[in-house]
Image 1 (cartoon, chains in turn green, orange):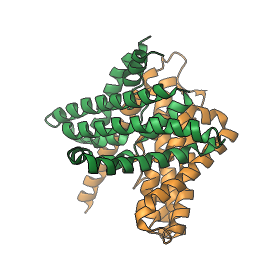
Image 2 (cartoon, chains in turn green, cyan):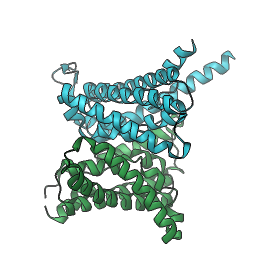
Image 3 (cartoon, rainbow over the protein chains, first blue to last red):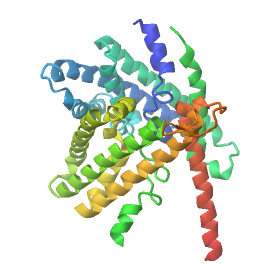
Image 4 (spheres, each protein chain N blue to C red):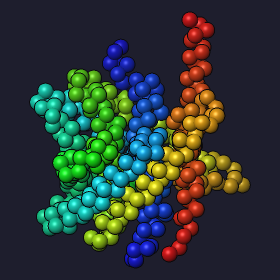
Length: 191
Length: 204
């Protein structure tokens, strides 16, 4: 599988939010302001890449050799939770400026199902190590792209006149639906 | 009476999906048909019930600093049990739910109830709360799946409902249909809330 095909597939065709429907909590929750959407997106890219790397290693060098594949869910969620904690501490020490901009979002990422989702999908699809790392990174990029588009739209929406009963959550979902409809157009791409 | 309240509050008044907007990813992703919706709802209910019971039992033993990792390990164990049970007894549903069964671990309803209710209440009330919230989640899934399956395939539970000349709106069972259906249902709920509020004001 070449890198171009993988990136188009991970970013556009199988977008984590709009096509696989994962990671909706930050998508709806953190998409009200453009800068916080950007910060969240960067944190998600970072954690998804690291999580795909480490969970692949755990699956193929720990769970498979010892024949304890049924512990996958427990092992992965613990790995991700401790990874997020570890990353938080490292960034706090090494790059305080980065920590200030990402810090709030890092704890939220543990329960972002896109992170656990990408780890399990990598294993289920039988991707190689390099492909898994790339899939994690590109999945994060696709997530960020959609999050930022959504934040831009919602900032505009603040000034628009919306019927009273549609304000808040309902209009956000209708907006997400229209975006998903647009992204559905990519699914015809044959590479 | 109060235990009856604990049981029913999750169905309508504090419905986890429609009112509190929790657990949206599995709600939207698995509500493509009523069978999937019921499968997902009952799986989550089982995990919620077991984790609520166990967490309310151990709430005094776990130091509050490490409580979240402890809860997550418990929830992950029950999710693994559900995963294996479904693979053994309902392989078709297990296959169509796919990756969303292990993802029950990160369903915010379950950790949310553990943190907000089970860690503060006794075993009996926590069990009722777990069943109520789980059934509320199932109810929401089934309501969404009802519209999506009817519009998207013209069938309900595999039976043809719409006349054969009906052209199915395929988009309803794809991802955009999920977002649009939930958006419309939420706006209907907000209209109904408005009406009942103004009704109360007139009566009051």
